[in-house]
Length: 177
Image (cartoon, helix red, strand yellow):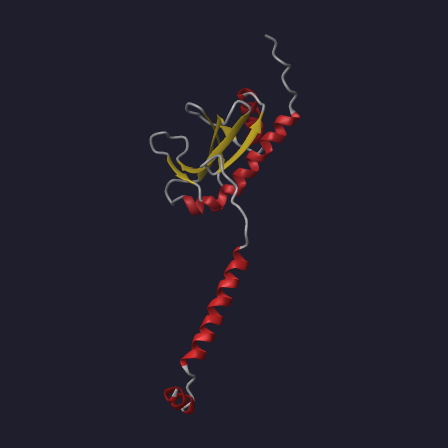
């Protein structure tokens, strides 16, 4: 005990008080971390693409028609598709040209590839990825770059319109066997 009294006389706090204040700081930091993170669960995703939406009880032909209507309504033109995808494209903005373009290739085009796949017998996921394309008309020299994740919201908003479009179009008559 004599050591601590000598230290206290020189104006230095004994180690117990350092431990208490250190523990208090750690406890406050831990409480702040718990309060700021909150508690919640992450929503399970059905797709690894930039955007997706699930529709129920709709035939694929009707979904394709609704997708075409939505994208054409936003100024996209249908492009050449491969296999099970729909492709839509339109000229990119000036800012997109600055971010994705270069000085010799001209402007860039925004291209969206839309896919649909069945989750089960009643549910279909419509998903898409966005690209910026240089030389979009030249298949040999075109340069397709995946869009930054900041464009996810824009693509998600487009896909959210598809179920609303499906509700607007008249449904098919029931099939008879």
